[in-house]
Length: 73
Image (cartoon, rainbow, N blue to C red; front, top):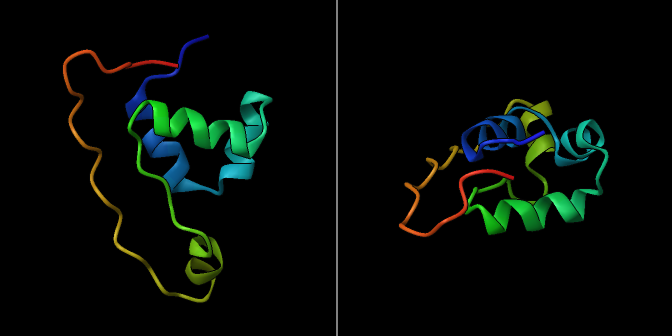
């Protein structure tokens, strides 16, 4: 199974990293390293509790892939 960086970006901004990590049967820290490797921005610490109380942090755009960047995990 491969996951594109676009799909991973959408998933980590749609729900907590722990939830996404469970889906892929990896730890959230491993998933964070994958996001780093693919240049996928992820929500800052405390993002989801703020969302629960109605505060919405701006979602950074997915940066374009540079030549030589990995595109899939």
